[in-house]
Image (cartoon, rainbow, N blue to C red):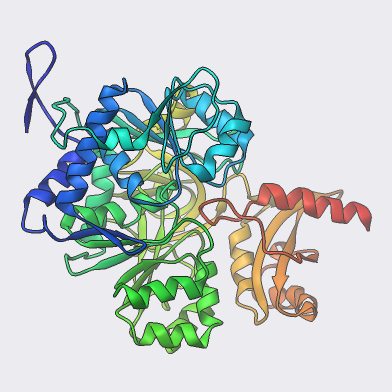
Length: 526
């Protein structure tokens, strides 16, 4: 689609909005696109509302290249804003709804956000954060006190003309900044272009075999990379149907209730929710009677016992495991249901647009073997926002260095063995926490397990296990169980019971940076 620039030249409009335009203009235009709390938007309605918001943003003084921080709970506004921001060539900065005021202040300051969009649930945190955007856009009547900022009501944006803005947007233009969860050091933003995001979505259409008959349940917050970029945008690409859950409080009873009511066929459930599903015969009965036949999960490998139990309880529902990252692709590898038991613990094979390799300790890069996992794909980020040195390090040798340690076998299956910074060196030997964690997870009575390294006078560092148990007496069996299945240096030297669920980040990954100090404090008390 052509557009005229301000100097009279003719440019080509590309980018994310053209995807929605194409779907809305096709045979699926009058079909339902998004459903939220009983309300529905067709593809034509979503397109027109996105155009209205885009023109409203321009009228409010928001322009190409401006960073727009978005602190919203799930709702239609997220969809309208993402496409509107894309339409005018601005850059979306999702703000994790779980962040505290100081974290919000850091993120907005680091991104140099000129605009902040917020709803009533986030208003108090914004006021405490002391952020300094030029423009604050209030959704749902939100009007936080932000000194020096000009206020715009979101409904005024929606009053904009429902037509294209004519802004020339290129595929290589920056679209979104996704901040890391900050498991080590300060969060940094992975920069994705329109091209990156579109490649990510297209690969999922092909590799997950999505069709227009599918109805996908979006459980995560849309402020997380997994919210929009795991299946969601791929469904909009082909004209499938989305059902969006409100942010927070997603118990398995609520999730499965929506699955049954809304004829959901596909869903994204983290392993924690899968465990809840296995503990609820009533939820299992509802799934058996529903249209749900496919679940994608991620954040951690699904243990073999869980896969087997789900297969027995829900024979009509397949579990597809995914491995990905905020640096993209959001889905790098897929482990299909057909390989789930034979390859339990594996992250699967790379999707069609990805090539994987490992960098071994001597710097050799190989298609097979063990080392740091490397990725090449048109969907990978272009770099970290305003961090040229870290960007150069991340792309050393032309590969994206993931920071994950893994093993690629002769069939191309990837097994993640740990984080590069999580690796424990005990007596000169490398201990990969995830290997020991997988063994402990397989024990009856273990809900969660994490391996962290603690100082040792003789070996330098030794592994200890932190577990959440159904029964405390199970703790006594952990070390003997590990000794049967693992080399001695991989066996935890101590088992610590954690009374509460293990701390996790927004993507469901265990926060070992919080568990290590907890373990050290326990050791000091003994």
